[in-house]
Length: 457
Image (cartoon, rainbow, N blue to C red; front, side):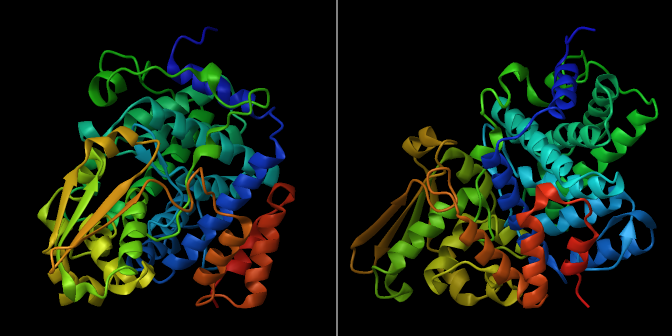
């Protein structure tokens, strides 16, 4: 058996990963990302797309996997989709920027759904999560998809297929076929993040994870998929990404300690991660001026990626939906200058339609600064330049900020984020139960008590 294809090499890595004994510091990162994801789940309770998904889950009951906020049980695939949507809805979960952006914690709810269905242990769940992060983030480092019109969740197809196979204890051949099926059969277009954004922006990653579980389930029973899925004449390289190198031998192991999850970024604001430093810059300027009434012009100097993705269409200067507003550089800078913060409430319909915000966005221009582009993706830097009516300019440049590799969030930060999102929905005793569960995640033998604590009566 030769490791001649990328899919085969990834499959072998996924199978061998089950034998790894993860360092405590990596397990701690998983616990942090897990509680961070649960904070995002709670913030999505009651959202319209979540309501629609819960109706779908209620019409497809099973005894496999639980759905957050309810006493529903459904199939692993549907639970992965429903819970994945909740993690992603607010755009508050962790992220990573390589050549391609993405959110590796999108794999967490799918791993949890399958772990519950397979009666896996907490340690096996933690291992699968680290594996999914490893593969998705290494693929994000390898090639850009968005420049070619494809969505970053195509990398979840691969990462989650490997993680699902790991949890299902599939062999190398079966795991390779799961990757082949998931990637070939479920390609997502970048239109999901272009123009006026729809509900599906928050669903795209959850759908990729759902499809990956389906692919692994088929592979378990002997289904084969197109091969070689990356290198073939009509494969991923030629049709989607362009050719890239992926040195699986350099992936994280206990020997090298170089696990990709170390480089994932967490969020202090419920908005697109690449514009966080623009918000920090706007908040800095707000403290240094008398008020927005004196502002004559606002220039946001940013990277090529940010200008192309977060200031690309007229809708970014006049958003109509929450999904468009939280991916708009002009809106977030204007809202930060007006309110002194960015919160979940910043994207309420009345805030988006606020005449003061609309008037301020009319004064905004977004330009690329090649120097900031050169820092990208190592640093997601932004500079905000405000010109006052007097002609005075007030400038703030932020290269990095809280939640970055340089300034990581602490356990206390994650607990505060969780409690802030949880308080409207579950009481203090339930919050304590969730926090206690996650504190011993790798030692857990069941997951029902977590879902019970997250349930809303």
